[in-house]
Amino acid sequence: MINIVIIEDHPVIIDGLKQMFHLSNDGIKIAGDMKSVDELIERKGRYKFDLILLDLYLPGTDTVENVQKIKTAMPDKPIVIYTGEDSEHWRKRMFAAGVRAYITKNALKEEIKFTLLKVSQGDLFIKLKTDLYSPIPTVNSDNQFNQHQLDIIKLLCEDNNQETIGKILGITKSNVEKLLKQIRQIAKTKTNTGLIKYCYEQGILHTSAR
Image (cartoon, rainbow, N blue to C red; front, side, top):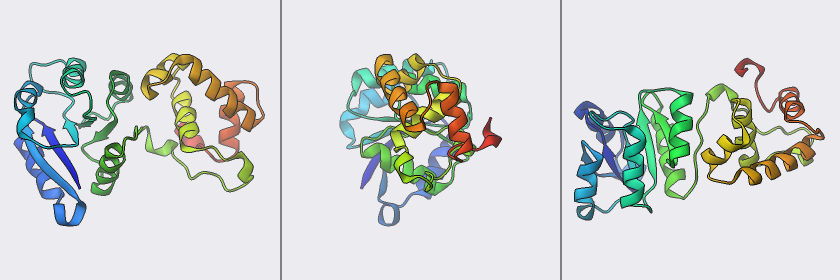
């Protein structure tokens, strides 16, 4: 069972989430809802919860500051952004600030449920442009990338440099370069440009996403 609290200023959204998830069918319980981060911090002792579903825009507040407040007051509670803002800019900013996932409000129930499950298990769930995703290739099984390597490739294709990729994934810039070196060795290329080309040629990334 996953217990979540919602920070959202629109009652319609809160009601929609409560109607969407049922404990008996989905294993997800809405433990509480608040209109502000300050309200959650004041009342945190009243609720037993595993993660926080946070609206990107809350009236009179700064989004990054909201994330920082939660991480300071409750460092063990993962944050999932739930927003109508389908923006790569905000995805990058939120992952850099320390959130564990970014879900748009037009996402399907199963996608939201899967994301909450992964985050509750301690995973970082990166959701980029959906047309960048593709099944792991079955040709040349010795050349398959694991999910972590695929995440790095996708971020690289979004024109992120090593420093930004590191912030999003929560690792150092030097570790990103080490991982990229390993990935380039698998692809038998010496450059990131060559790596991206290889991934498109092998069908790991869709050409329509560029």
